Length: 134
Image 1 (tube, rainbow, N blue to C red):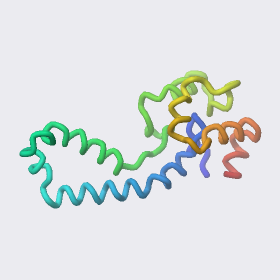
Image 2 (spheres, helix red, strand yellow; image 1 turned 90 degrees about the vertical axis):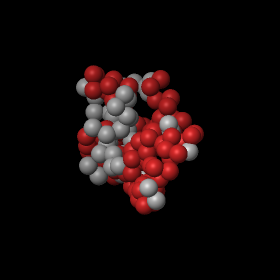
Image 3 (cartoon, helix red, strand yellow; image 1 turned 120 degrees about the vertical axis):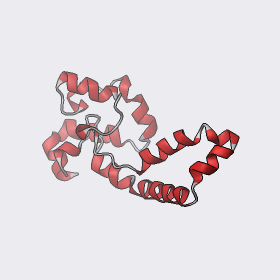
Image 4 (cartoon, rainbow, N blue to C red; image 1 turned 45 degrees about the vertical axis):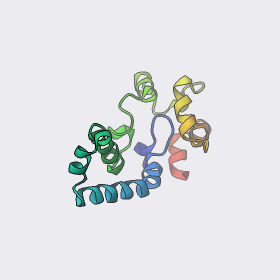
């Protein structure tokens, strides 16, 4: 694994990209199916869809894209974790004494304890060893 694929929060962006591949493929297929039946025109004549279809397409386009990882400009552009780590010039938040309130959202999303486990391993082993063994 590349060191640059480890996000500031400790997530492995490459692993996330592999996990998201099925969603990306299905989003591409959905876009193709919608375009194939000219659904943008259909949505215009259905009152409740007319105003919502463009936002729906934004979500599908987002899901069908490739996230390069947060160190390469991907991820949440408003991420407080990234902003804080960069300000402190930390490679990951493992350099902090404890994980802060900015992690609450990640704990709700990553219920498998990946964030906590990775940060703990990085603290214990160091980033270089973590990257070698993960």
